[in-house]
Length: 167
Image 1 (cartoon, helix red, strand yellow):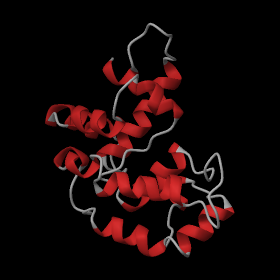
Image 2 (cartoon, one colour; image 1 turned 90 degrees about the vertical axis):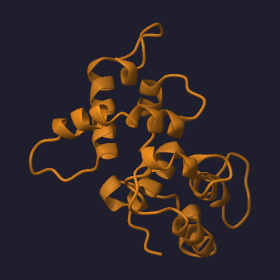
Image 3 (cartoon, helix red, strand yellow; image 1 turned 180 degrees about the vertical axis):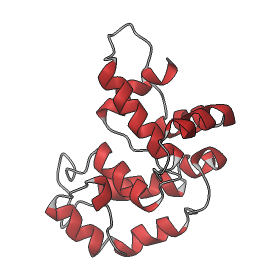
Image 4 (cartoon, one colour; image 1 turned 180 degrees about the horizontal axis):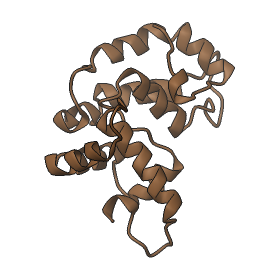
């Protein structure tokens, strides 16, 4: 497995990088093999459900990459790094999550389900795709990532305002 996350600016802590490229490699590849490369998040939300390969991969990267021994507090691979690593390998399935995006989504039980539900509407996807400048080759999920971060920066949420994703 090649750890190609440079375009998404991911730097793993040394302990986690050693595990990902060593002892964890076979387990990570096995979960990645269960995730298709030719479908979009809204087409296969079942892949994100508990016990599904996406959640298994998420747990491997965010919790199990704790080499050589488990330590309290985890492995310093938080939500943003984990989602960027997965998005680097499955950009059509994995939204990038960070504190800005999570705040923009507002309180939701399952972030992937919220993304999948929001993206089911073909008209909404079309509006997002039309917002991408000509000549820029990014998928609709990357466009959403950019728009949410941009909107959140332009319109910071107060406690009583609706999430950016709903505006």
